[in-house]
Image (cartoon, rainbow, N blue to C red; front, side):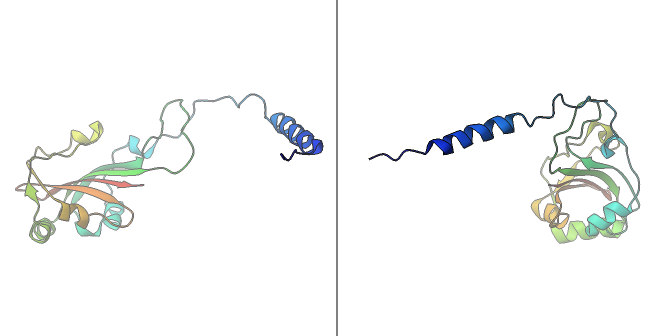
Length: 165
């Protein structure tokens, strides 16, 4: 024996569907195209944001870097709301003692890898070769940031790509 839904339940479901279908707000609001530029649009040289996020770099001498949210449109497109992934790409001149300590503690090696930097930052990047490795990457990562680190062989320059998602 099959059980049938009472007619009033079916009627209530149809009425609710019709009522909800009419809850639209009409046409979406017009898009003005005015957006605040993403932070990644500018090259930065301030040191504190890097030193506070990545303590292993010590007290750097100088830095050229970009940072901001990935996927933020700087034109008239509308970004999708929701969690953002953040990126920091930096070329950092370390104190010689800091660079030596990173080499000694984490034993990075020349494996033929080069950092894949944003075009705006690539012009500032050293030519390499670079020393890198899992231990160095881990040392410059933390609970918030996952890093790929490259020490220029024979210098105190660190190239860092870090993601916070």
